[in-house]
Length: 396
Image (spheres, rainbow, N blue to C red):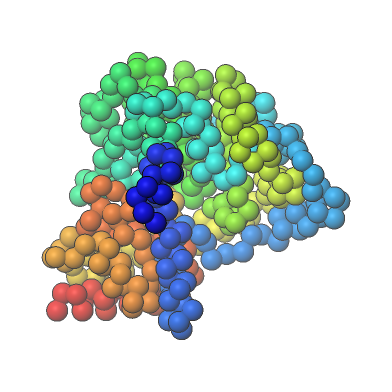
């Protein structure tokens, strides 16, 4: 394709790329097709199946003929279930009228940013962080501004640093609690400090809480949405992908303030019209059905985390921070000289373990790789053996 032909694409389409965990997953699957045994620790997709009662709810819904258009905002039954769930877990009061059902949490993030950001607006995003925050901001014509957290400081949230990057162009602060990829959980004190800045500077807050049920310290993470003065300026986002092993169902939601509902739904109407009713019925079953699967998942992930952290911190040359939540461990490879995160991940992939280069998640991620503890404990143990062997080869 020559330059003239290439210039026919819109500028906004050239501001985003398709690199990320899904891209790494597809690369690993190509090697699998060649007969290589790959342990997938790159994407945040659990090795577990969606619980059977949720699958059965979708099947029953299909048999009932629930295959037609629904409300763009989402079915009332699902929105009522989501509202009840949010009020129970966050100890707050929200209405089904403020719930908007979206194609995954990524959809909720996309529609919020598209509804709020004008060209030149700045959006503060965590770094390391989920790449889509910055990508969607750029797509909307905004400028992502990185709020850095560092491994050697245990990924603490520096409020003074946050304050220093807020200016007249700042429109939104994006939070991810628990955080992908660091696994940190924000304390109430940190959230109160962020809320104080948001109110002082009249900022919106996007609180991505997709990992809210995946906590390892015994306490459900506090949401900034519940703090005084924050409900009217916060879009709380959550979904079904992680908690109920429903990544492929593409079902998420946002709790939007009253004055955003019409704008967001108008964008959605012109994007995808509505979500399938049978998928929404499955979401209702997930929230209203037995929750034993959630507590069992949390116990299993706690065991996987401990296995990974203990193994890595007993290996020479590499180390990691012990995550408090989510699905990930960031591995520090800085003691292996002359090796970038891409090189390390590439070498490890050839040894049969797929992880994500830290450079895909952070401006300062060249000395880190992300491990998603999404495989069973036997496979993780094998992966740790391969990781240890790979490190030995690279440092001999």
